[in-house]
Image 1 (cartoon, rainbow, N blue to C red):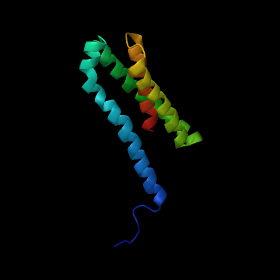
Image 2 (cartoon, rainbow, N blue to C red):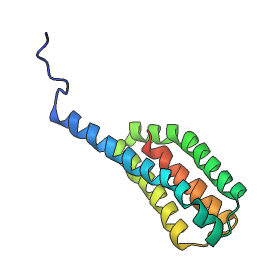
Image 3 (cartoon, rainbow, N blue to C red):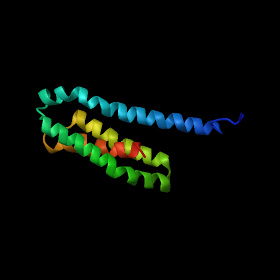
Image 4 (cartoon, rainbow, N blue to C red):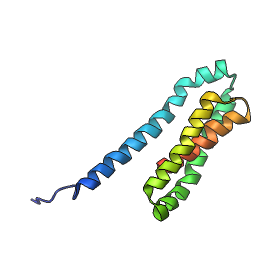
Length: 123
């Protein structure tokens, strides 16, 4: 039986918990959008089609920007990639909360900005 530690250093354990925290926060917020669908539909008059298109765009942006943020993480460090992704994500949530949410603005806030932020959080 080996007496080696599973985590060789304390830094590895802290990194693991930090990465889990980032994924928990980013995906936790994203998973709740379905709970607010009726509010989007009733208050903002967002149709099922517009909501589905925004979520589809979000998934597309998540997939397209993941490798870009991975390259940023390789070149400049993971903290730069996470911070820049957080800025996109926070801007999307902020504009979704405060900005005009009709037509193309809903697609930009919910689909484009939040999707780009997710791409950086999953590298």
